[in-house]
Amino acid sequence: SQQGEEDPQALSIQEGENATMNCSYKTSINNLQWYRQNSGRGLVHLILIRSNEREKHSGRLRVTLDTSKKSSSLLITASRAADTASYFCATDEGTGGFKTIFGAGTRLFVKA
Amino acid sequence: DTAVSQTPKYLVTQMGNDKSIKCEQNLGHDTMYWYKQDSKKFLKIMFSYNNKELIINETVPNRFSPKSPDKAHLNLHINSLELGDSAVYFCASSLRGGLETQYFGPGTRLLVL
Image 1 (tube, each protein chain N blue to C red):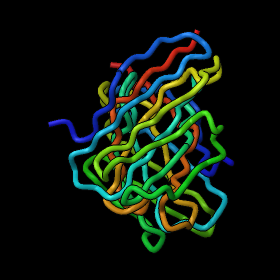
Image 2: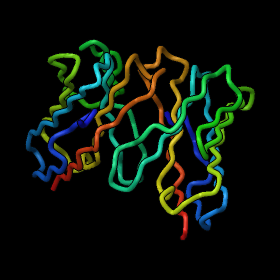
Image 3: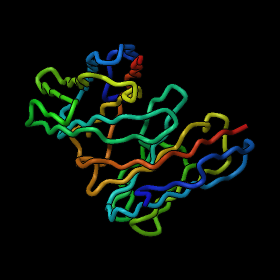
Image 4: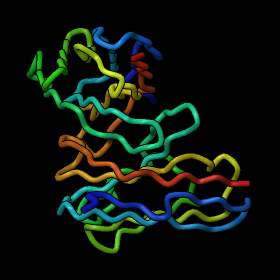
């Protein structure tokens, strides 16, 4: 079953604008991670937020986690053309962590 | 140095053939994974190994057989390839299970004709 569901499926913005992507999940989790995938490449880890954290920052990235709503959001501020990629959330389904479930991803296109 | 490497990068083969994909990580991680990404970019876990031991097998057909000769390697052998096996296969590793960051290989693009 698909654990993480990203929203929107696709997003097109102008360079300099902020991009917000949302992720919802179904079961309890130990942590939630966001990954980026450039076209034709493997996934690259962006940020990990644990279930007892509510917000985390890394450079231009801001991730929030609301365990009561089983949702997370990824905000990319001051977007650049190089941010064009697919973004996936991933959860561990509250298991020992060996089963990571990825959502379908949000395809972000940043126009220069 | 490449952290997680996969070979081959591209694989084109006929239905019914048997093929293998190799994965190696030089990060000293305990856990390795195989994922399948379909044409809609949906990424699904197939297997996870911890210290050479199979931990997760996500209802993958028996035609898929992973083998971990040591902690640094996790290979995937596929028998009797079918059209539906066409996808991108990613290997990944993490220090200890999915609670930690996973590092992905570049992927193997498999096309079954």
